[in-house]
Amino acid sequence: METRRVIYITIFTILGALLGFVFHLLLELAMLAAIERKMHFLTMGLTASEWDYARYGVFLFWFLGGTLFGYVQGTYWWNYLYSHDVVVEPRTAKRKRAVIFGILVIIIGLWYLTWRP
Image (cartoon, rainbow, N blue to C red; front, side, top):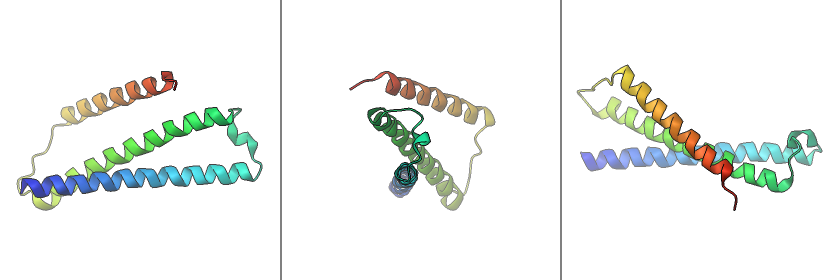
């Protein structure tokens, strides 16, 4: 049963990552179409190399967000469909996890902003 659970949650995580990738794709296609129509005010004064750098940050945000969303949904639906004795997690534990995730996102974001290739 544990192997099925790992496979189930892994598949949900992969689907979440793909969903994040698709969201990033749609956002980038919309931006390219707008710039192609001569809407240069959307560039916000950034050069092409700066936009290329920012694009990776946006991709990382959507990819990690989609991966996290897929993991959370996989865990939720596994417990909902297959677990007969669902243990409700205390609210403080959920808050603690959210704070830890927020701090991790901030650290990764700061590292990304200060890193130069």
